[in-house]
Length: 321
Image (cartoon, rainbow, N blue to C red; front, side, top):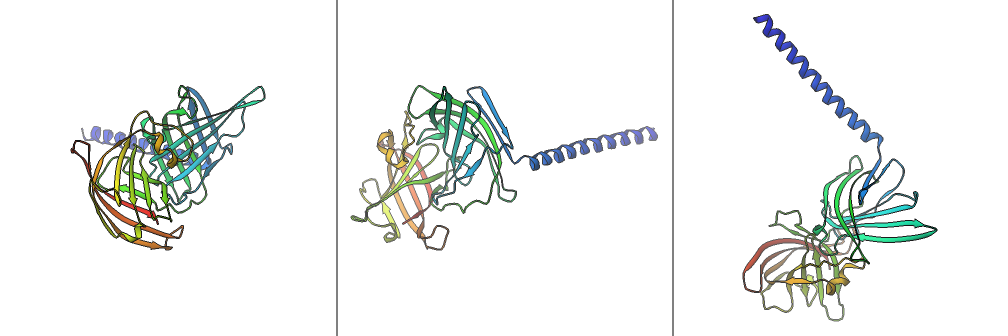
């Protein structure tokens, strides 16, 4: 009986060893593939698949423009009758701000250009980033995405798209510092990127806007520079020096114009706000990008028009002055 048990244990150990070796081989093989592949782009557009491996089709990190976001542009080169250019604008953690497909088809010597995008103020309404990884040590980026992109000129035309990008890149610029972060919100859309700022030097009026992927818009509205207001309290009746809050409503506009200029074209649900804003730090040329940057905290109570409390949130923000 002892010999039988010994044999069973021996067989068991051999199986464990074989499974372990098999998994080790898989890991080694996967690492070998990753080392050899500097560029992998797979796209499925309306059911048709396009794939490129190490073809030098090109990925460019367009920089961070010090607005809390960065852009990636991917082109497939001029292949038979079809050319695509993808542009993905994202936050440091990969949260989606905008995704665009620029499509050129060649027909009898004529170039037909079409642009398809996520909604301007609510990209998460029809599109999602399923995976986002940046490894700044190995200088590789991985993105997987899926959703629907709509034409910027024809409301009846769209593209169903899914795919992944695996690519090597050179060193990235420092990330921008302009952002607004909802500290009390654990959702995937707690990050709002700065996209539009108006400073009227004649009157001193200053509007600082932030937008999130799920259609939130938070605006700091001032009648003087923010550096003059170290501690600001406001209520629902305040007309100046306040923080406003609203959400984009359907239909969501899709446009390739400058984001801030489209405020009036989008339908919004406005809310009543009260709270306070406290400036916690002022940076004077001590961070990438130079200039004066301001960091602060906003405690915000949001009510609907029937005086029901919708949200109570704490936000951390950074903006230039």
